[in-house]
Amino acid sequence: MTATAPVALESVACLLGCPPDDEVVVRGHDRLHDLPGEYTVVRCRRCGLLRTTPRPTPEAMGFYYPPGYGPYLSTRVDEGGPPPAPVDRPSVSALRRWIREAKTHYVPPLAPGRMLEVGCGSGAYLHEMAAQGWSVEGLEFSPDAAAAARALGYPVQVGALETAVDPTAPYDLITGWMVVEHLHDPLAGLRKLARWTRPGGWLALSTPDAAAPEFKLFGNAWYALHLPNHLYLYDQRTLRRILGQSGWQLRRVFWHDNPNNLLMSLRFWALDRGRTGFAEWLLDVAEGRRWPRARLVFGKLLGALRASGRLTVWAQRV
Image (cartoon, rainbow, N blue to C red; front, side, top):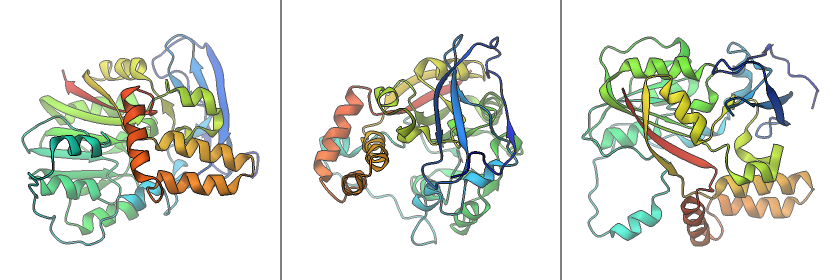
């Protein structure tokens, strides 16, 4: 790995306008694709917000989103055509549904209306929500992933949120699953989303939790660090402040019932020490090929303790 990335970089001050007063938290590199470059995450001592600086410019960031980028592949729908009809399963008990619900895609209980998914990838969630009666649209940075979603019949705008054009009508719900940490200007992006939403409309966002104990434990091996793609890292307090300054009021916070941040961080830790066998076993557990029930229970425990390292927030336009 070379010391510097073959992309243009920019240095950025605190997003919230604080006077310069930063501390270095961690330095790391791209662990998912082993692309070159070392990056630094700093914390503003005034507000606590973490950011990557210097970072790739918006024009250069595409280098770190290759065609094999995980979210593009994991959101593919195997077969095209119209979405499947909703299936009512009264035989599945409420307890079992609760056990299986990981709060990964958790939205307010709304009647179907107009919905936008920011960072829709290849369209799997659009497909799911269309099956529930929603009129869905997408916004996606990757032209290839957007083409896959369009092939399913859904309107998808290609490009970054910061440069996206306004919709023809307001939305009732906007979702962004693991998106806000990727934005170069999250304040401008969230203000735009507020403008696109009807009064009283809802926003559902998921993001890594920078207050997670595993971040302190693993440092640059923390799976959710995801350098340099993750430009900002939030905890509940800083996320509330960012939302408040962009036209949203935070209503609910949920921690995911998902152990994968911890399992994959352990995997990086094992790989750093040459323990490839243990690393492969951890990958099998994270992907459900081994110990699926234990993984489910462990995820519930981490979620209950607010220690899964992943959270979802519901916010309402004000």
